[in-house]
Length: 404
Image (tube, rainbow, N blue to C red; front, side, top):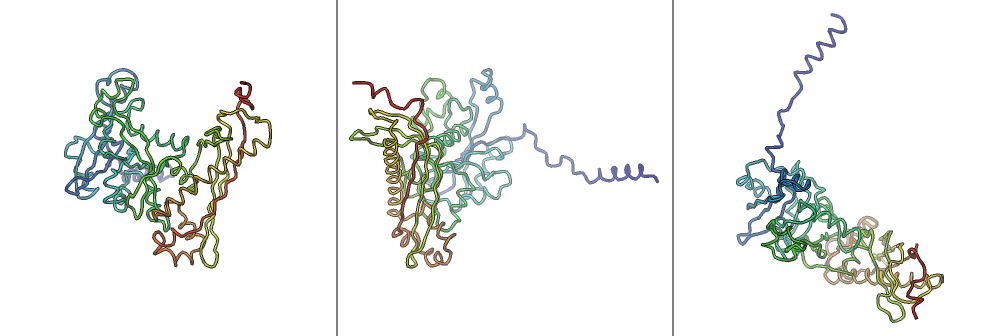
């Protein structure tokens, strides 16, 4: 037998080992889930709401053709004693296989987060080979997860994409929310000295009308989904909400600020300058003083003058220096408020315990069991901020300076 025959023989034999398409799934057999919401009913059962994409309606809507009279998504609801059972029972009202590989939003109701907490909710999701741990997580603030998942949204045809895009943009531009996924939440829950904070979403308007296709027919939607605060957790359960400067103070410390705007006063004029942050870096370190840890938060921030409402000479280096000092003062105050809030509520959402655990593991062993309730509220925290003005915009002095 020559070499060619040997090769041919090996090729023919190897074909017997090819598995083929024994595990194939046809697209027409799948119900593609884009979002999952978890609530709790009066019988203490899990209530799952599943947002399912209608491919034909989405395509028609994007092209401006057919599908305009039908919603781009449908929703089904099921109950169960566990997350796993709830997902399985959803098949009772669906003619297709529930497919979670494209689920990119997970919504937890405020009631569920307060009463049940997060500790046991993610195990089945992490085990499922379909469900991705990069799926975004939000808390339904002042409403149910079902209402969030069932709301029909304009612009973004798939409602889950509306929530995700809003979360990403508001986290990037405003700095008062946090873009967090399942993997991040699990890490925060399992990391010593760290509690999670999760962005909330509120349904603004009429919940029942927001579920109808007519919600996107007018210029102003009857019901819309808006980012609304940071959910604060302790021992895995929701205890409170943070908003505005306090929320941003937390984001400063967590080194999650991408862009934001800081208003400062000037010579008795409130909000005289708007400082637009373009770059930021926060470092949290710890030192020991007689065996007690001391935390230092050091923020380096760079940005531009975004708006001026007072006559001032921006060509004067001393004026620029004074504005930078005012920016530093304002950011420092926001961070201090976030620290005071966290210590008052005895929950280390700032990750100071994690810093001590990494830098001073022997000290952490002595503190960890009573960290949130005893040691964290008494922790000394130093804050240092260095701000720099990179640009003043397309002009230096405002036209306001020329107005008599």
